[in-house]
Amino acid sequence: MTHSVHKRHYSVEEARRVLTSAHALVVRMLELKQLLDRQGWDLSRHEYLGGRGPNGDGSFPPEMETIVEILKSLDQKGVVVKGIDEGILDFPHLRSNGEEVYLCWKVGEDDIGFWHGLAEGFAGRKPLIEL
Image (tube, rainbow, N blue to C red):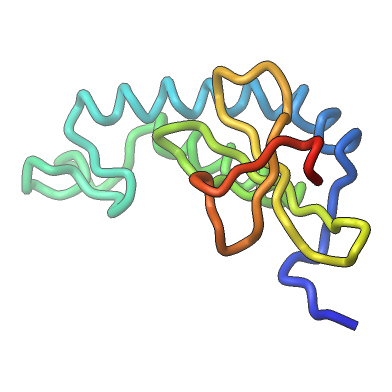
C-alpha cells in the first residue's frame, strides 16, 4: 500500500462541487492581493515594503487578514492553493491505479479540466480525459 501525502481526496464530481463555492473565494483573494500589491505589501513575507514595519502601527491590513482566512478555509477543506497571484487550486485525487495526483483549476477556467502528478506542477497538466 502506498503512502498518501494528503488525508482528503476528491472525486472529480466532489472537486467540482467544492469549486462552486471556492471560486468566489479565490477571485476575492486575487482582488485583495492586487490591492495589497498596489499599496506596497509583500504578502509572502507579511511585510510592508516601505521599511517602517507593517503599516506604522504594528498591525496588518484587514485585506491581508481576509486572505489568511480564505486560505485557512480552503485548507480546512483539503484544497491546496498553489498560486495566490494566479488563483491556482489543486484538489488531491487518487487515480484508479492508486496514484495520488492533483485535479487542477485556475481562475478563468470554466471547470476542472486538468490533472497533474504531485511533483509535476502546473506545467505538467494533462486533460482529465487522460486521468
